[in-house]
Length: 212
Image (tube, rainbow, N blue to C red; front, side):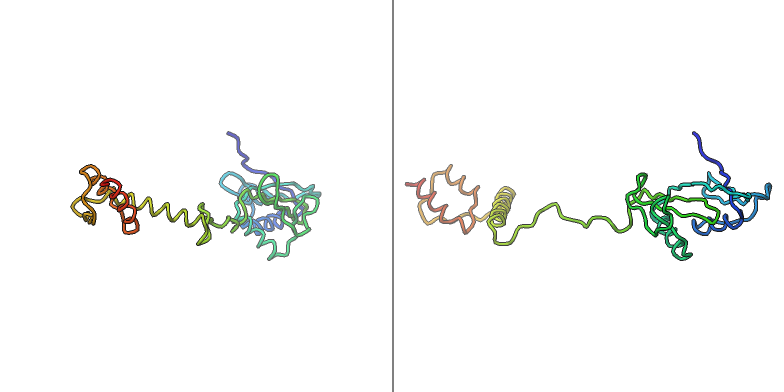
């Protein structure tokens, strides 16, 4: 495994450049390096430190950082509060725009320090509060439509069949018949069906057909 331990960032004034970077990025400025006073280290994370060093003619570096969405928004807020220009392209780091289609992430921006160092932020996370609203997988059907009536009839039929299957013989009321009793097998079939009030006219017809 290979990781970057530290990098030297040149500037006309290393303390000014280090303070600028730390303030914008929300990092701590701790002063000169205890063993190398010509460096001003800014610890970026547990693995990386930037050592700012003063030189007569700084050439400027391009340093890119992956940040999460919350950190990205916080840095933009600090840039705005300091009135520090930023932009959506390395050639235009002061146009006040944010790249919303960065090739390496969802959002990106660039800003420079007084010594010409160009910093890039890349946020692979989507912007906040852009989750699609919840939608039910079931499509609604207007009340009274043919589809809704068919669906309701199907549900009632299913419920009726389920109730009949689960009904206990002890709790089932015998169906009174005004016509002569049908044969034993037919009567058992009719009791198992247990027709409701709306089905009585159908039951009577069946009974008459069986006993005829």
